[in-house]
Length: 65
Image (cartoon, rainbow, N blue to C red):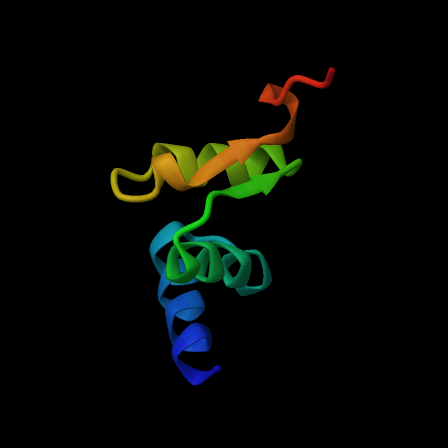
Protein backbone atom coordinates (compact mmCIF):
# COMPACT_ATOMS: atom_id res chain seq x y z
CA UNK A 1 0.00 0.00 0.00
CA UNK A 2 2.88 2.37 0.74
CA UNK A 3 4.30 1.79 -2.72
CA UNK A 4 0.92 2.63 -4.26
CA UNK A 5 0.63 5.78 -2.13
CA UNK A 6 4.13 6.87 -3.10
CA UNK A 7 3.38 6.30 -6.78
CA UNK A 8 0.11 8.23 -6.50
CA UNK A 9 1.88 11.12 -4.79
CA UNK A 10 4.52 11.26 -7.52
CA UNK A 11 1.84 11.18 -10.21
CA UNK A 12 -0.14 13.91 -8.46
CA UNK A 13 2.94 16.11 -8.42
CA UNK A 14 3.93 15.27 -11.99
CA UNK A 15 0.43 15.77 -13.38
CA UNK A 16 -0.50 18.65 -11.06
CA UNK A 17 -3.71 16.82 -10.18
CA UNK A 18 -5.27 15.68 -6.88
CA UNK A 19 -3.82 12.49 -5.44
CA UNK A 20 -7.15 10.71 -5.03
CA UNK A 21 -7.51 10.39 -8.82
CA UNK A 22 -3.87 9.48 -9.15
CA UNK A 23 -4.36 6.45 -6.88
CA UNK A 24 -6.52 4.92 -9.61
CA UNK A 25 -3.88 5.67 -12.23
CA UNK A 26 -1.09 4.29 -10.05
CA UNK A 27 -3.08 1.09 -9.50
CA UNK A 28 -3.81 0.76 -13.22
CA UNK A 29 -0.12 1.16 -14.02
CA UNK A 30 0.87 -1.31 -11.29
CA UNK A 31 -1.64 -3.93 -12.47
CA UNK A 32 -0.99 -3.19 -16.16
CA UNK A 33 -4.62 -2.34 -16.91
CA UNK A 34 -6.08 0.72 -18.60
CA UNK A 35 -7.88 3.29 -16.47
CA UNK A 36 -11.41 4.09 -17.65
CA UNK A 37 -12.65 7.47 -16.48
CA UNK A 38 -15.58 9.78 -17.09
CA UNK A 39 -13.55 12.73 -15.78
CA UNK A 40 -12.69 14.64 -18.96
CA UNK A 41 -10.22 16.95 -17.22
CA UNK A 42 -8.29 14.04 -15.71
CA UNK A 43 -8.40 12.16 -19.01
CA UNK A 44 -6.99 15.17 -20.87
CA UNK A 45 -4.15 15.60 -18.37
CA UNK A 46 -3.15 11.94 -18.40
CA UNK A 47 -3.63 11.54 -22.15
CA UNK A 48 -1.15 14.38 -22.80
CA UNK A 49 1.54 12.74 -20.65
CA UNK A 50 4.16 10.97 -22.79
CA UNK A 51 4.33 7.86 -20.58
CA UNK A 52 0.70 7.43 -19.56
CA UNK A 53 -1.29 8.40 -22.64
CA UNK A 54 -1.93 4.74 -23.46
CA UNK A 55 -3.12 4.01 -19.89
CA UNK A 56 -6.29 6.07 -19.91
CA UNK A 57 -9.59 5.67 -21.77
CA UNK A 58 -12.44 8.14 -21.64
CA UNK A 59 -15.80 6.47 -21.10
CA UNK A 60 -17.33 8.50 -23.95
CA UNK A 61 -15.01 6.73 -26.39
CA UNK A 62 -16.40 3.31 -25.49
CA UNK A 63 -19.17 2.00 -27.68
CA UNK A 64 -22.16 0.22 -26.22
CA UNK A 65 -23.97 -2.49 -28.08
